[in-house]
Figure 1 (cartoon, rainbow, N blue to C red):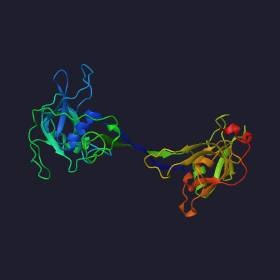
Figure 2: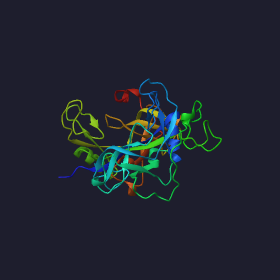
Figure 3: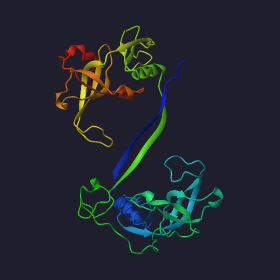
Figure 4: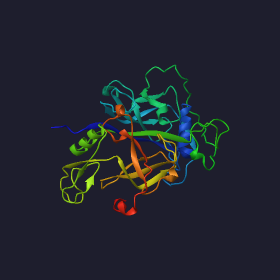
Length: 348
């Protein structure tokens, strides 16, 4: 029996957000290896800073520098670190209340084993070698008894004078972080944006029917399945007809020629984009199929693509083929007359 195909799949994007004046100032100070909190109406100093008072909901702006040392409030042990975590070896997660702060922050503590951790232990920040203006500028915490490093300057005890960022003008949240002097508003070099990569890694397995379809693509063939009851042809095959609920066992090889049913002109650039806008993503209904699939339509100006346009697959070189629809680089116009609307109106 042929084993269904499976492959690792990463789903992700780089989440970029504007920070605003409070968190922006916090990140800017981290880049300078300083930690600031914000004072609330009840006198408490919040670290990390909050934008609005937890008691009155009023905006907060009185910044207070706190120490780089603090106390472990609570902790847990991470025996098997996950990808993307601060260490690839066991470590502790801890809530650390820095001296001068009234609320704790969550971060990693670098110790060899759980016996080195305790509630009330004194820890200090180990700064990243190359701070960029993010929470990872705090590489981790370490026991305060460890020798001080000499690879970067240490800062004195925090000042008792509150610090305030300069006001940021409208639109500052759209500026790139770490602006050079003279560009944009606010103070030159203020951190205004942060980008966080978010990824989910899974092993994706496909059905036996989809496996046949993908293996056929590796040989330059487009394989669908026909419902024995309504006779609709599905590509990619689904294993069962969604209309009648019966198995689709009859395999049908389809041509690589079809009709554009609907389409979208992509004008907006985005991260990871491989084609310069404008270009067209279209649903293509292959001749003999009863369901369209999404692909690129190139080989003509974007404003020339239209419903009913006849297109043909443009395949990559055979030596580059694999078990993927990416074997087809794109679809291009055939030059044939447009298909009559009634031939595809039921497939929009």
